[in-house]
Image (cartoon, rainbow, N blue to C red; front, side, top):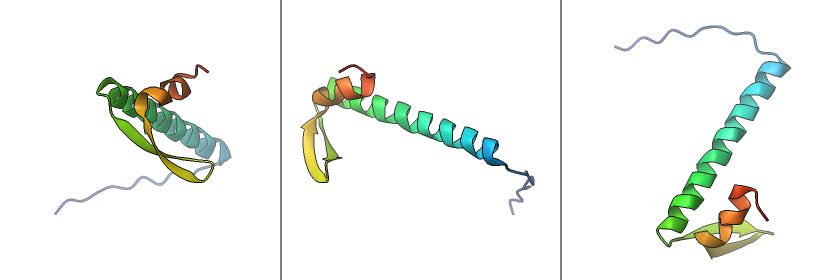
Length: 69
């Protein structure tokens, strides 16, 4: 049987803000990598834009994830 020790940690707003920031950075990086790898292999991705679901070639999404317009 695997026993896990749970450490009690007081959380305050700054701890939660820091954790939230790290999660968002990770999600942004994962999205960027997905688009880059999909574009390199000529694939499309399904996105939602203005409430509309679209299939878009990943190459068209590269400027969005690289921060360039």
